[in-house]
Image 1 (cartoon, rainbow, N blue to C red):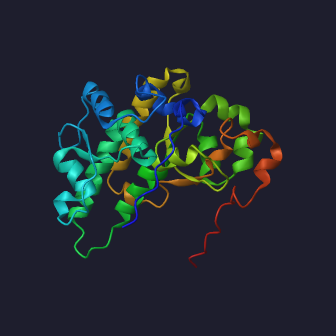
Image 2: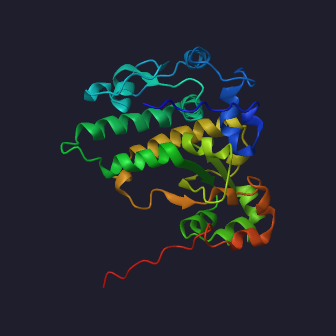
Image 3: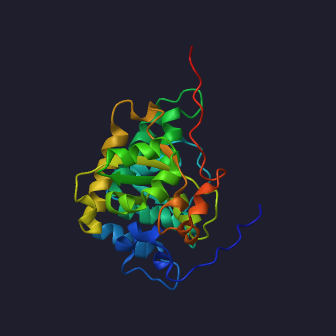
Length: 276
């Protein structure tokens, strides 16, 4: 079997872009000039007393051989033992570990829902709820707003009106917080075409003025509660595609109005078929 190509470490990666902001608080104290070790990540998890939804202390462990038993598969193993298989010197797994540190309630809830849904899968086919959980876990973004009108622009794919014509309102009334660890990896080398799956979260007026740590803790809890609602993972409107390089300040090109005329990236709302 061919060996995976070693990945290149980027110093000060958490300071490279405002996209990385949600991970900076939990990344404080970790080395910025080399890969953090599992032991260093573990000390941070221990300091935060992180646990799974089943009550197991979180542990970052080396990746093992391909699991054959259900109990040893990735999500069941986390739920049953607290062990998160984490490859060394690997961006995807590093960002997953940092996401656990930053959003422990939501990550634990996603793991619980994965585990319980997997128990009900009898034919070997993944269920829609598990697909939705994976989409958000890998590519999710939390969008907090105290303005219902701005939220509707997201739901209706009205990107230029949102990000350009109402740019100042977005700055004052809408916050974007990357959740998915795969998206964090892509944000190291961003390019047009990257799309997030947005979870819209209503917040009270003044929420965006609170310290970032308080915002993240509240959004972590709100996300866990939203995903756990009965029927939430069967709701086709739960997640909305969002071209996140359009978020003001996240991409140099979006300082130009013409950037938002790219319909290949800022796709219009899909045409809904008339059921009649």
